[in-house]
Length: 121
Image (cartoon, rainbow, N blue to C red; front, side, top):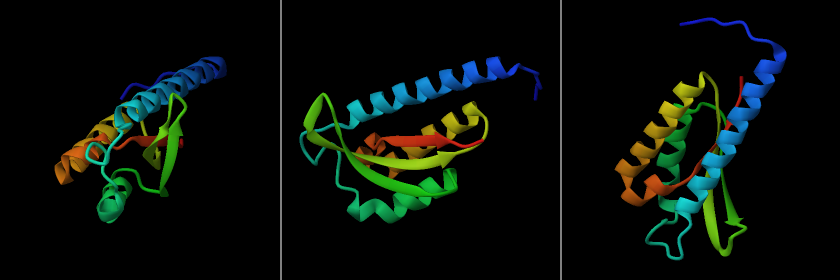
């Protein structure tokens, strides 16, 4: 592990970059998950216990599900899983990828479910 000393301004610039990337990723995930029919993005009612277990295993802490609407496609509801993540950015991204793979293993369409992570130091 390499330890580097950075200024507060450099830290804040990096943090803004990470937050902007998280927002862009969430936007992309949401657009990928929007579907006009349940066949593409299934209802998660029957899967919630497994989704919650996997999410808490990879991202300990509170897990919630919210249904939102994309401003570009307000007629389509998007189900988004929200969780908190801590650790290095690369570790978090590796766990996010693992989360999608594990959900896809449960049901191929569950791999399309968007995951919104809030980083906590």
